[in-house]
Image (cartoon, helix red, strand yellow):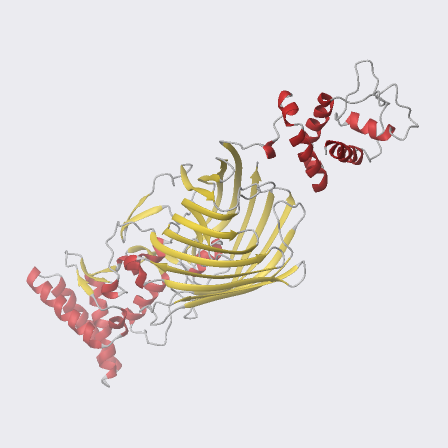
Length: 594
């Protein structure tokens, strides 16, 4: 057996030496006209063989085990330059001469069970994008954000079955504006929010930390830089991407998961349970916590309702305007009077709203009086089904399952389902279908559909979203000069975007939040626009609010291994009510350093 291995080793050695070498003859006893001259000279230049102190090669001499081990050790050090077959031969030789290699102090990593070995991958991203306080045409308010994001990714091999993954993250701003992060703030109330520890300028927070255990038949992890890839149990804070594009959700879960199959190729089933830590709380807060309106807001609502009722009764517009003003003034006076009068006014108004059959009444079964001097009502869009207190843990509990079948660079198909748990289960219970297909090695198409089975009162519907697109090329950060260009169309109704999208432009279109709305901050457009329409009497059952439909052009280029440059452009965007949005441009460069 060892003789066969030595012959194979000779083939490896002479294959490595098959290139012409312009160098002086390293050995005095090797004729330049000899058939072995090129190979011996090449091996000497590569430091694979050294010869003897007197300058001779002694090719006719039998080689010792120690000398063979020296050659194998040098080949092991150069394995990355060998072919797969040659690497396999060197591995077999290393196994046969393991003790001799150990005596030489050589570590053959593929043959050892490494404990506590940690790989560090530094990820540096520079990004330039506009952040909007109002994204709609004619009212565009924005600030430019030039920022850096630094991530320190660690992969620790505990043993051949267990791996620990970690990610530390920090942001730096260069344009004088706060760097946006979906997890930056905890909201204590509508205008009361505090910055989370670790999310300030230059502060470091732990973004991911999870461990996996590979069960079943042991997997050969040779050539798998991220450890085992099939039949995994995991626990911690781990990444979750829904669908092919990740427009619906691409963030982290804090919990546990089970993966059956190999996530790299073929079919695999994933079941996960935990808290979705990248939920956009600014966008989802009204659905969870309700929204409190001042006395002035409520008086305006009452006046608008009286105006609509007068017109419906056949009164003139002038008369309806007078009724509107009188009603608003009466309600405002009642809400600012003594506690008994305020309570009576609030009770009557609540009865009128509930009995009116207006769209406002259909939004909620509960309008809760606050009556603390400046506020009158809290409106819960989900009625008594979802009434969470401010300051509660805003990471939404989620049960998630997906089945993915893929053949890399050919096709992949996804089917998945997610359901919020607890009170928020009344807001989200969705399923999705997604696929990608390579028509040719360069051209690929993809499509995705998401349906929320919960009927949301906001637009009185069970919302859905879809996207489809085409791309040419594949920008692989490990392949220099690779590139891709593509175009997507995204249609996302309010209630199908869960936050933490894979794309900052899509985030702002689908989850747009007004920085300032009346006297309140960070109010989602779907809610503010609805209430504006109710207040000014323009709301009607056929009008739709929130969401977005838009085109997204994307291009990426890898000038060198480990560096990718990307440009995105969002255009022809509008919300579901037809309000046009501003065009957006994003540019970023990401380097991976190992």
